[in-house]
Amino acid sequence: MATVQLTKVGKVYAGERGVHFRAVEAVDLAIQDGEFCVLVGPSGCGKSTTLRMIAGLEEISEGVLEIDGRMVNDVPAKDRDIAFVFQNYALYPHLTVAENVAFGLETRRTHRNALVAALTGAGTARGEESAVIRARVAEVSKTLGLDALLHRYPRELSGGQRQRVAVGRAIARDPKVFLFDEPLSNLDARLRIETRTELRMLHRRLAATIVYVTHDQEEAMTLADRLVVMHKGRIQQNASAQECYENPANRFVAGFIGTPPMNIVDGHLKAGAFVANGVSVALGAEHARLGDRASALGFRPDRVRLVAPNAPSSVSASIAAIERLGDRTDVALDSPWGRVVARLDADATRALREGEAAGIAFDAAHAHLFEPGECGGRIVA
Ligand code: ADP
Image (cartoon, rainbow, N blue to C red):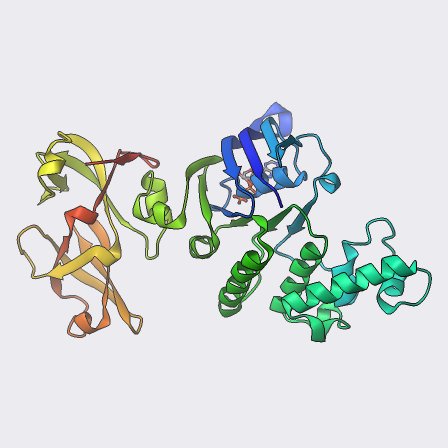
């Protein structure tokens, strides 16, 4: 296993007529041995480009990439001792599960006959090598629960099984680093959740260094030891999932991490109160020290309380929609502060009706403040 270190890594794509596009900028990232690192961000934020640079599938325009302390900027992909799992599985349709898993072990003699020989013990493969391949395929199949499927072809497998085979092929080679690019995105919702639990358990068993790309923040949060939130080619925050959730470094991270998303309101601080669209709510004495300034206020849906309309320190609103999710209820409210979502205990919401008036209240201790702008930094009271 290995460490992966990026220092000021950037990627500039050369476009038509000399127009260049900077897809990744000044990425500094140190991934520890055995760490599960997830790159997450919206489509186009540069996460796949970053992963592909680590893999050696994309040239590095700027900066230094080191694996286990060795600079590998110019080392070809095949010599980086890395295994890559893509979203579309990339299985060979004419090879069985066993042959697909063994494929990575057969780099020098990649034609089918050699593989078949190795797996069946017949034909031309050298005995010792065949035995090693057979043993490794058996071991990997056991780890991933593929034993019963070894003789099937990819077309005879479900999406989840195919993905397990793709993971099996990656594991078989025992690489230094595993790279995953949206590996679960072709699976249906239920299977995605099951497979991500399997991946997490597999990571613990293998103690492998993993770099994993997804646009799905929930998937990212459940898998990551280290969460790297990207936007517009830059790292916005690099911390544990819990830290990104509780102390988002900026407004972008605050809005991206968490479901339903954090309520964020543009306004300004004035004498310890937050004012937006003429409606003011007192925050507290420590906020008064921040002075009067433009800012954005954020509070999570599960920190919202519904109070009587016009109650002190509340924002008057009307209930636009009620979504009952069983144990909890999401209530969308229209207010002078815009659309606000409250996530409440189901029991507390039985009497609520759409169209009714309500007051929005929140606990200032759990409110967040940011500088104005899309990536405005966190303001600490
Ligand atoms: P993500 O994986 O976060 O969706 P990508 O890393 O694939 O994002 O892409 C980042 C940005 O770089 C996007 O704006 C994308 O259009 C651009 N891009 C990706 N690949 C190329 C390429 N080969 N040539 C030019 N631009 C590219």
